[in-house]
Length: 114
Image 1 (cartoon, rainbow, N blue to C red):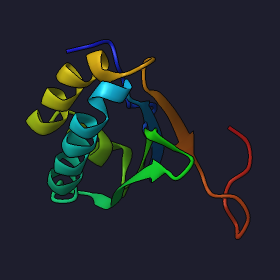
Image 2: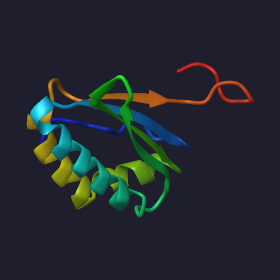
Image 3: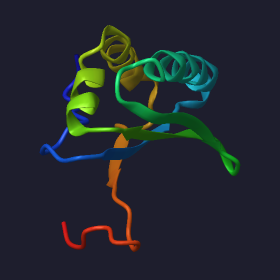
Image 4: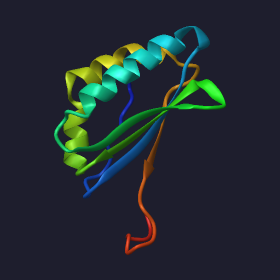
């Protein structure tokens, strides 16, 4: 497996936004694999949302929105074979390494700070 890590410190909810920019010749293959990953991941325990989007202005750029009920659920998801297999093949298809942004809600009583 590559050196990609999608986990962090333990907390209640885990929300991630991984971004993948495909080499043009691998766009269709990446889209296909992301679609399969989405279907499998939605079945993983603790998955609240797992949606794949394509940038309307850059068809080589795919954005994942992941929401997990707990950090533990995210960690268990990342240990699934469908995730490991995806992360093993995808790096060669990308213009640059995938970027992962961790998100948290703001307002409505959400905690402030890091």
